[in-house]
Amino acid sequence: MVEAYTKESLWSQGKEIIISDHEKNEGRKDYAEDVGGGYYSSRLPVLEWMNRNNRRGTAIIVREIDKSAPVGVWKIRETCRRALKKEPEKYDTLKKAREAMKNKLKIGNKWEKESEIMKDLRSRNILMKHIEKGED
Image 1 (cartoon, one colour):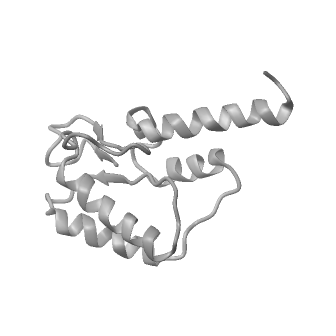
Image 2 (image 1 turned 30 degrees about the vertical axis):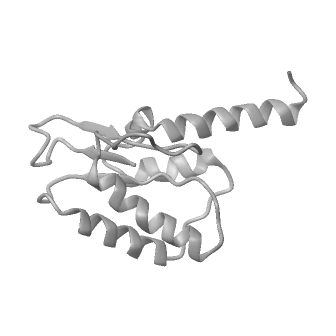
């Protein structure tokens, strides 16, 4: 999960702040310190959805905080549940998905630098392009 506080946020003191926590296939061994409770409250609905739909996969949650007041983790959990009930936007490529995100967020794609999951996806995407071309 990535949380991005815009300059207008009550928490950011006029600066953009981007923090993230993640886990990979092996799971986490320690508490998600940076995003903390928001990470766990957004993780739960994603896992519920994947279990209910017999799916496995990778999810990146980007939460942009602007002028809104601080909310509890229950709000994050319920917002994620509501989002997962909607029809998803679908893109043919990672590049197109990234472009759509850039256009929707005030911070653009600055969040990508803090997302270990996005870094992995981009690496895999580059690797697959080389494999498809028959390059070593």
